[in-house]
Length: 395
Length: 182
Image (cartoon, rainbow over all chains, first blue to last red; front, side):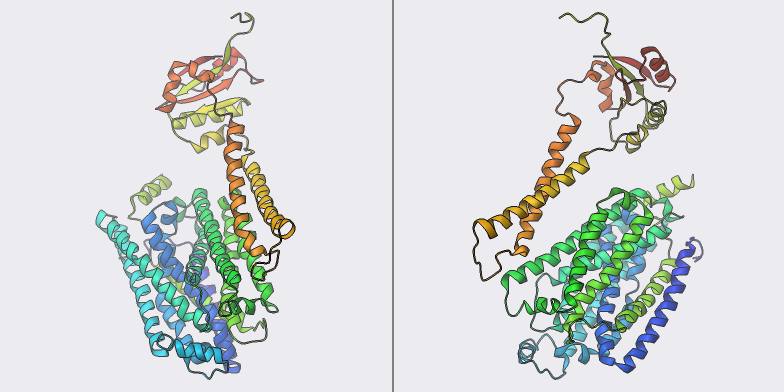
């Protein structure tokens, strides 16, 4: 087993170095912020963590989807997705601050509550919303994600020597059951980690909103990476304008699904206008939050939707890569909008920790992602189609 | 049935090719030679073939966009007009102009008009259904839906000359060149 048998474009090394440096800087700055205002630190930490955690989960879901559907787009990004899923161990570490800050983050975790409606809701939901059960569920989610990621990566690597029918079937059947598990774990995760910030509030589509957001983030990351290194060997053998076109079309579809889910939740809540549901939106109509919501309508849906309608944009690496990078940025804003208004502040109060924490966590995550990317060939070499295309490109 | 004797019943010239690479290369050279009224036929879609012929961009996407915008405005306009002007009703104390409720039907009419424009516009622009086409007068053209590839230069092309175009097509290395009767 020689580790240098596969070429890795130099951009991956650059990404790894810069990500770790930026991540370290962001985390050190954030830790100093934690000493000054610990509560603010945890409030900013949660949405930043959920964003990067979501990219890894999106990678896992997309990986299993492409095992089930096949297609050239899947071959081109499979190793990127696998690298993304192998970051679960570092996400467990990054989850520890949430555990440490439980009391400052979640109203049900033991801190004194002045609002009687919140106290009432906590009393009723105590059987589910309590610290030991919450931690147990978190362990279960991470275990499921870790095992799925590990097994899929292992079988995929083994099949580099030759994809036989048995391995192909194994990957498919793990993916089928795995997607079911993803649907359940992501739904419960979204309820535990984000929806329970207001124990009174509920929304049935909330988990799906997280799923599509995560898939969109993961796909955008893959497009950014492909647009940077996809035109060089070895990826260039598989990735071409058609692949970019396919990925761009998927990104457009995901953006539309995100808008559809988001609007469904809003329309139903707005139509019902019930006292236990509508306050969630009323909080987001106050002060500066209104502008954040409007920003999401325009830049998480309208603008990328119109831009991605163009065939030319989807087929040009630079153009579609830029759109994908912008989508990643807007995804952070979406998580910010979903999570941050739940903390009792007066209107929209941006804190500098809201910037250093996404950078800090993101730097560490991207660094690990780049490092994982280097440990395997960038293409699933055992796939017959990949072999054919590599032979064609080499000829 | 008295056809004017002076006008030859020639509609165009057809060259027959063995494989996809040959026909794409030939199409490229036909395009370079400056012929405009050209079409190519293959048993399965070849993306490079349309590019090699320098096909003009279709108006269809633009028409579909116009159809979508029309549907969007019409759908929203209908709801706005009926809910606020023609028949204002207080429903659960909500504003008369309750735009969130209008979004879904507006989306549906947008898609409906865009899809309708796509189907009808496609038919209008490509001239289908077309019960008669001269290319079928050439017997071996039947193989265009099996295993042969064809390029046809129409006699209506400004650069068309029966003899010179004939020898030009022959120079592309086809299996055969035939006259297409009108």
